[in-house]
Image (cartoon, each protein chain N blue to C red):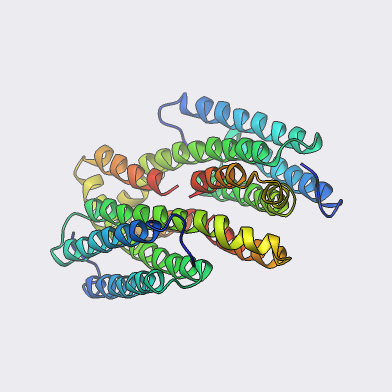
Length: 90
Length: 90
Length: 90
Length: 90
């Protein structure tokens, strides 16, 4: 993976660290027997943070690798890889 | 949150720790510039693990808190809380 | 299914008819070779309308059938049915 | 939208008609007060059929319009359109 713009890598890592922090809190909340609904909201915050990172990675992938692949006659493989990710997400 | 059966708490914590391990690997993969599609698959594994935990927590919530709430005339609040979680998930 | 309040049935049917209208438009757009992205947005509108109907049905189900089931010692089956729906949605 | 292979259009239209049939059945089930959980399963079948159509349309879009756009210097707009669809789906 190459990142464009270059600071994108830092932004992705930063968001993943935030997701890690949220996930650590989910564990602490279960550990302390906190209210299920509050745990579920915290867990959904983790998933939201991870999904935002996925979107950044996918957008970067389209702008770099996929664009190169289409230029280099490797279009079909690149598209089939994206579709696999997209189908799992649905 | 009270857990039924009692070992459910251990099972939930165990799965959350697995999700933490997967998420740590996502960070390492981004750090090492690994292939975007591989990072996205790893990230989807994290989300899958977290969703399985959510399902365990929600099922436990229905069996304990919600059942109590319905017995105690607090049905509407309990249902509105579940619907909030459900709507965010869609 | 019994509906509470009674006009809920009309509201659900009305929204489903809206979803039918949107879906018919998706077909017409594909028929006329319209731009893929526009078709996808229209299709997502259908899915959004159907999900809103699902939420109304699920909320009604929790308020009526599930509450009755919990009062009648059929809690486990009722909860397992809801979890099945919830898991498919994730 | 241009379709590759040409019979793809027929396949997409066929699946959308199946989704229409399923949706019509959801309406009939609500009309006849059938069991909520059965209605929800039927409704999820509609959504599944529509999502499969979306995937066919998106894959075709990547293979035709997006590949052309990348060749014609319209990469950024094409990618931003896909990301919009992808984000709504999450």
